[in-house]
Length: 116
Length: 161
Length: 93
Image (cartoon, rainbow over the protein chains, first blue to last red):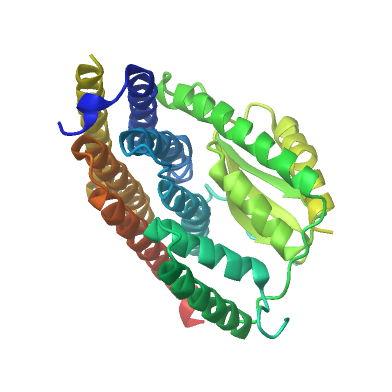
């Protein structure tokens, strides 16, 4: 452990809490990948990690480095913005791909394409 | 001015991104950032993405706060579903007719719905404006339609006219 | 006091993120369909990125941040490309 020695307790407690909450939410999301039964249910699982999980861990990192270096460290915002912007795109693409494949196979688990 | 900065927001965002990445506001960094912002704005214009007009910043900020609160709430809901016993929840597809037609507004709605755990945007039929949504906890279908239409679509239609 | 608190919470967080990565890997290996594997991969790189950030806090250096940024960018491109590949019918048409 380097650096954490001189971290005051008022900063250490929120950093620890944010880390634990973020990691726990991410773990729950990944457990969801195992427990949920169909593909369309499992698509929801990673969003736990990519919304609050990433948010909490990034906040913890920002707080930690800001206090440690006694200046505002905010470049973690970049990762946050990037994840927020990209996760919906990937999940939407995946859901559409899965729907397309299921329809190709004539699965009755998914709604049919609307006739125009 | 329009020739120099065809997309001022894109250029400003690129400039800020560069400063954040370097974590400094030294003159050299700012200069490189400015060049990058100008080049980025020009190349973005070459893609001809069309312009989005955002109105009512207050409504947009209120919507952002609402979405943040919803993300926290639905995180807890979905965590409970995942950790709870099997087969107590019912998931499924719902179809929601949308009146929102603005492409930027639709993109924002898609991001909101997919980013909040528990609902995933699956397909949108631009001809009829029909949205196919997959919901993890489909206890009350009408409530979901109301949520999407009143909570998200109505403010988005104000923001993107 | 604060050192012990941080050390332990970091350790627990890292174990949890490691377990999360294991869950995602299991989904990648098991499938059953290709789209399930891609969802698992998506979760895997996200969890790996968070683990790197936790390592960054532990070591007190910002080098891990850059690695996390690269993983975030490459992971997105990879998942998007795989998702597009799964829709191969529409690519060809």
